[in-house]
Length: 552
Image 1 (spheres, one colour):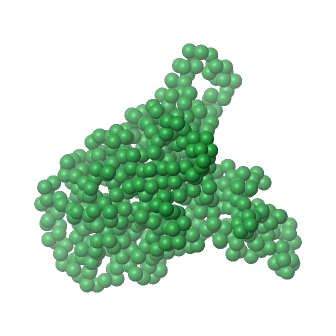
Image 2 (cartoon, rainbow, N blue to C red):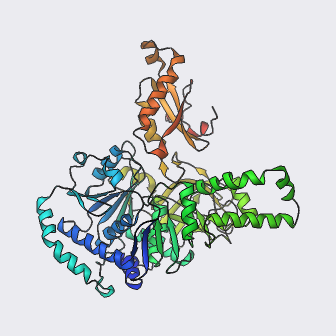
């Protein structure tokens, strides 16, 4: 059973116990102590009361990682409302749709996001507030505004007298809904993953017992907080332990990430394969592939010294103070992983999905075998749908305390994914005799973006299929980029008197237009004309695996 029985135990307790310690900072910006966090949460709770927010109501949050984003998140779940975190790189249309689909009553928007939104497209909101300073951007409830302004002076006076002993949040049971996390936009194939507070608690509790942070440890947060991986392990877990979390607050390019690591020297590093692979390819690979270095690396004893130096350099890039680098969100390049093993770099690979909030398996760097993503965490049960799970690949099925409650307002998708009490992950894997999991592929079509975002090709294909001169389409991944295979509508082409040789320039303009409506991570790099109809199953579904590794 999860040791945290109420949300207050991983929000209220660290505030009480670490009152004077630094809690949340913006990189090269303001720092908030745990006491400061408490004061802002108190203010936001009074704001929610003024606008008539009830326990179970939904509050949407859109913006880049920063300290106020984290404070808003904590204030919502500790109030008993449901947080709806939305990735800031969704298109404005997708943001509007998610706010509406989630039934959110309030919205917090970052400055850059707010400029692109249209309040008229979200008519059910009572108010919109700024992430930057919690100021009111739009109020659709005059009575609420008057009530809040009338109580503001007394609220500010109460905040000045707050002490650790006065911090008391409601006892919200872990069984209650805490988060609705949208893994995609709401056009076509929307899925709002409903995570209970128990899912958050189980992830935090497991990390507390296995990832070894203590109060005062430094953490750098650069993964998207609206994504389950970054939120759980760069924010909620470190906060529960009394750590000091620094948010990058900007697009996390490798130079910015490395600068932050050098300054802050984090104790635990959470990252995605893209960061590791870029550092390897740009800083290490060119040096180790010179003829002289290749010879030296094959000389016993001498190669150990070389590997040690490389390890020190790579570890230094991450601040040199970490006890482990945890990689998740996507598959790690096997060549890179083999080299990390050779130099004895302290890394491990975990496995999870939004529907588990996210963790499914993990093992520390000392014990995790090459190619494995660890052992099942203790709050879950797993079975592999094959006759011989140790040798025969099958779909990974999960059930347990941190599995989602279902998809919001989508019973069909919930029923399809949650069968007989088991979450069908869509991932294929095997289990060795020591209990380590090895992922072998994906049975469903979802593609993982470069930073671990979920990309649903059907959603993109739905847009492509609506274009003139397109009969059907298939979106695949090639060398880390999304490519659209297009089977043309030859009849329509002929009717419009278009020469087939002129089709590609037309499609290129369509590609640019489609990309305007897609998040950056799911934009199409190029379109390829596929002159034969796609091979299909008896049910007329395209056999995706036939084209997944196309090199056209």
